[in-house]
Image (cartoon, rainbow, N blue to C red; front, side):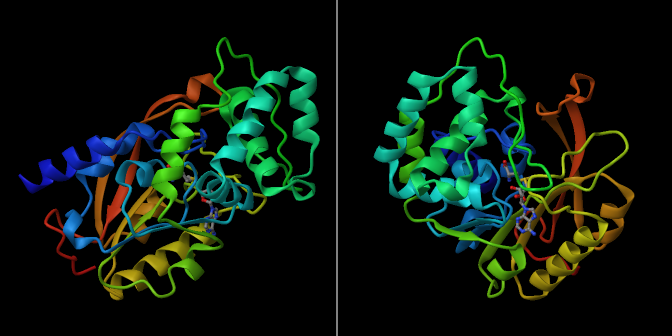
Length: 292
Ligand SMILES: C[S@@+](CC[C@H](N)C(=O)[O-])C[C@H]1O[C@@H](n2cnc3c(N)ncnc32)[C@H](O)[C@@H]1O
C-alpha cells in the first residue's frame, strides 16, 4: 500500500511542468520512475546531478533538493526562475510581443555572456519555445544553432507555470558542475537520480551533445565507478540509460529494469516513438540496498 501512497503523493504534486523542453526529458517516464523510487521516508536529501528539464524534481518537489548540471545556461535559468520570476516574466512578455523570424535570429545571435542573468534565462526559454523541434543543441563552440520552428500556437510566457516552478525551486540548492563534485559528500539518506546523456545504441539515434563536451564510453565508465562508490557510501541510487551491452555490463551487479519511453525529440521523424531503455537501481522494492 505504501508504494501506492508514494505514487499518489507524486501525482498530487504534478502541478509544475518542466520550464523548457529538453532532449531526454522524462515526462513520459514519470509514472514508471515514480513506481521505482525508494520509500519516501528513506529519502533525506534528493540529488538530480544531470538535471536537464528537471521533470522528476518537479514531480517530487522534495524539500531538500540539490539540482546541478554542467550546462551554465540551464543553472542560470533555474536560479532566475527561483529568485527573479517577476523580471523573467516581464522579459518573456517582451519577447512574445516581438516574436518573428528576424527577432528570433537576433536573439539567437546574442552571446549569453554579454547579457544579464534575467536576459540569459529569458533568451533560453524564448529560443526553446520557438526553435525547430524544441531541441537544445550547441555546436563545438558552445553556440545554440537551431533554426526557427513553425508553430501554430505558442505560449512563450507561461506565467502560472513559471510562478509554480519558482515556488517549487525556492528551497532547492542549485549548482553548476560535474556530478562527481556535487556528490562528493553524499551518504546514507541521500537519493540520487542520474539521467546522464545516454550511451548511443544502434536502434535509437541518441542525442549526446547537450554541451560542447562529448559523453563517450569512457564517461559512461567514469559514471559507473562513481555509481559504485556512492553505493558503497550507502546512498540510494537510480539511473536512466539506454539498453546497450556496455551499460548492461557496467551495471551487471545491480538491479536493472527495462522500461518503455516515448521519445518525442528526435530530428528524424522515423526515430520518434517508443523505445526501450533501462533503469538501474541499487535497492530492492522495499528500499533495502542490494549487495552490489
Ligand atoms: C539527459 S539530459 C537530462 C534530462 C533531464 N533529467 C530531464 O528529465 O529532462 C543530460 C544532462 O546532463 C548534463 N551533463 C553532461 N555531462 C555532465 C557532467 N559531467 N556532469 C553533470 N551534468 C552533465 C547535460 O548538460 C544535460 O543537461
